[in-house]
Image 1: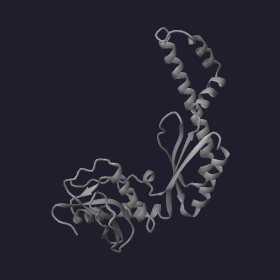
Image 2: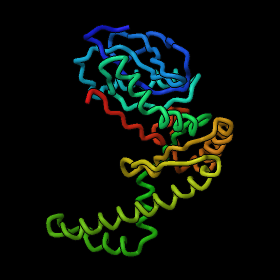
Image 3: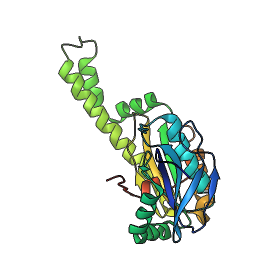
Image 4: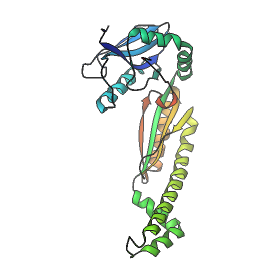
Length: 255
């Protein structure tokens, strides 16, 4: 299983003492087999890769990495390892499993039977949101009126100040509406993480740790939100996926 020119690409850690072969689904163009390296009742999910390859983030390899984890989590709780992590050898991987056994075993036990579900919420019509901000703020209306019809250079400072005021109002509106959404989803989750939102339209980008037994309940809550806010907000719902947002598994290899 490998050669002196081959390294071991790590996808994740699972709790099994059985040698497994998940098929030829590894990262890279070769389609290497994804297998396990076992230490006691822990296993690292790995595939062979050329040692000299530098795994810069590419869409193809990132998707392959995610597909492997999603395949494995059909059968096991998975501790995901950061994309692009490569060990020199199977022996180095076993050393990792041995020396961090208690930590890894504890994390697996903590996450047993839990999945991550992702929810993003975006306003459908950002123009409507900006109109609401103008309608709700007399100060915004006043400042708009002050610069209306005047040359941009003459009113540059005023326009900057107005833009900052509108962005502050937008942030407050995001916080208020995202809290309404979170308030409906939190009761069905064990934990949650707020991730950075991107652009004016996105008001929520959250990951939820959910017991598998409550996954259908969480699905229904998202469906209810979609119906409730259909004219205003579009929801992007992803999962189940490995608990990327709830495991901080720093692994240093080749030191």
